[in-house]
Length: 126
Image (cartoon, rainbow, N blue to C red):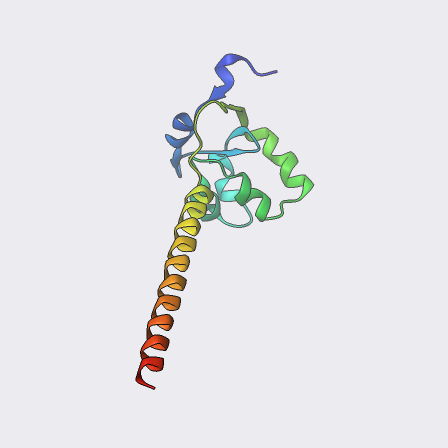
């Protein structure tokens, strides 16, 4: 069981997103993967893109093997403090997708409205 000093907030993690100081969160655990960057089979840029935030979805989407998951344990430094708010890249994407849905709804309403007006004008000319 981790001690209180082993809990990190999103603010703590977000302060470590450089190539020489690289932390990520995966499944509620915080990892300092700085020393692993050069050894990562997918290249360091993949990890650097996910640093300073919750990278659970990115990690899972990549389909890591059991041995990769075991390897991560040597970089474990503590637990993520779940009482702090999480800002993930996926969260932004979901908000953006929601905006798109609203725009599509507005576009659909506009198309139907224009169709009704054109139909009305066409029938009026007859």
